[in-house]
Amino acid sequence: MKEDFYDILGISKNASTAEIKKAYRKKAIEYHPDKNPGDTVAEENFKKAAEAYEILSDPDKKARYDQYGHQAFEGGGFGGGGMNMDDIFSQFGDIFGGGFGGFGGFGGGSGRQRRSKGSNLRIRVRLTLEEIANGVEKKIKVKRKIQAPGTTYKTCSTCNGSGQVTRITNTILGRMQTASPCTTCGGAGQMIDYRPSDADAQGLKVSEETVSIKIPAGVEDGMQLKVSGKGNEAPGNGIAGDLIVAIEEQEHTELQREGNNLHYDLYISFSEAALGTSREIDTVSGKVRIKIEDGVQSGKILRLRGKGIPSLNGYGKGDLLVHVNVWTPKTLNKEQREFFEKMSKDDHFAPNPDSEEKSFFEKVKDMFS
Image 1 (cartoon, rainbow, N blue to C red):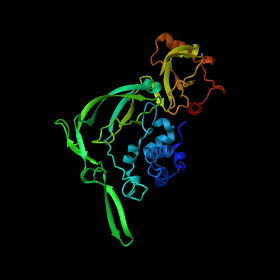
Image 2: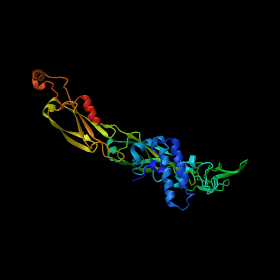
Image 3: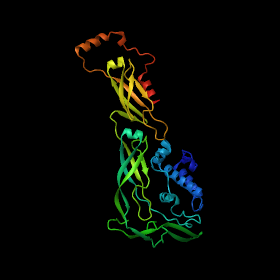
Image 4: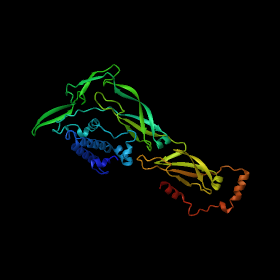
């Protein structure tokens, strides 16, 4: 089982933004590759800390993680997991940028080259309730920028490929050394040497690509999922951006969703309510036949357990709540009117609820229990 992000950083769920950043910086310094050369365990812990910080430092991602756990960013290759070292050093300049360099001294050491990241792309995917309940794989055509074939790069003459410019300043405390991104190449360490005629100024061109997106069961309307590396590419040795997938839930003609539960309105006649009947109704997994007992009252709620939406974190399924509504005819012919006038004086037609007949508020309470 994947390790909890809060445990990785050694913080509580109530930690503030400043506490999260402080905890991450502490872990980053402890497991930094420059401090632990050749130590694969330290490198793995360094990646885990960066992944935890990426999620917990973003209020929206943190809220989704608190509600759904790792499933909010996983399932079919989505988001979060599998960060590489380039992702980490590209995304967290607030932690590693400026004067924070190698451990041979701030601004010294390895002089790690900064790698730019391409911009993210956003798409909206419409899903039926059945697709949400069962999970689905969608193939979507995406227009994204890629490096144009034939584009070549050369080493930046200002920073000699390091991506950083080092400055030494004399102060009353002594000589201070600082490093900042090279302004000539933007910290990439490379510049365009040749680009084809169909490429833009960065050596990129627009290309259409079919992306396969595996959407896990249980997603909700408005939820955003991430497909890593399927956004726009960056020039040179940069990192590709991500494809952000926004979920849009289509309305179902018969079913209404409420969290992981589903609701269905079933209308029956007076005679069916009195005599009992059976009906075939829609569910997200196909049609099922349900039995209506004789003497059923309007407002009765039948619960079909496990016929709702699966939980995104894998903890079971919701239920399908069938609301029985007895339909009152709006017009009657002479014979029907005479029948009901006669029955209105019959004791069997007089309202006489017993202890088993629940009030409206008790039914609502049961519905949410």
